[in-house]
Structures are given as C-alpha cells and as structure tokens.
Length: 77
Image (tube, rainbow, N blue to C red; front, side, top):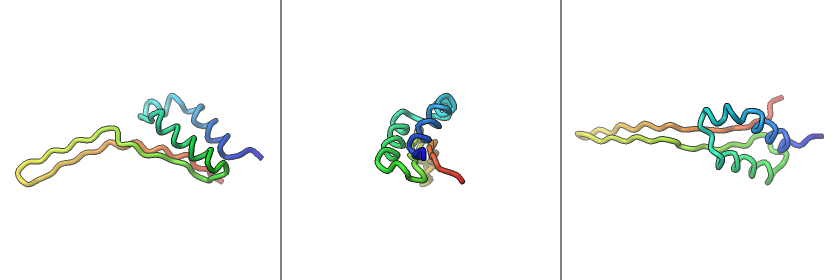
C-alpha cells in the first residue's frame, strides 16, 4: 500500500509549474510536506498564505483587499 505522503510528494512535483504560476511558495510546500511526514496516512494536508494586502482608510471607511493563496492536497475516493 502506497502511503498518502508519497502521493502528495508526487503530485507536488507533477504540478510544480502550475503551483508556481498561482503563487504557491516553497514554504507552503514545506508545510504540506511536514504535515504529510508527521502523519503519513492523513487524508488532507494544506497551507494558506496572504501574498498581497491593501488597506485604505478615508473619512470613516476602510477598504481592504487580500490576495490569498491556499494549497490543499486531499485524497479523493
């Protein structure tokens, strides 16, 4: 039986270019890998990262924009 950890690593390598285009950082990949190492047969591993944030305050109003990248590797049946 192949452990989910090995499949996660295979998927991360397979989609490396697409992950880079979306904005997934090396730290996020390391977090997912560490989660899979800690519990090799876990059904899901993931990480979030806010890559850009804009906040503007004027005349009692607040405008906030966040650009968030979320990486989730999940086993589907």
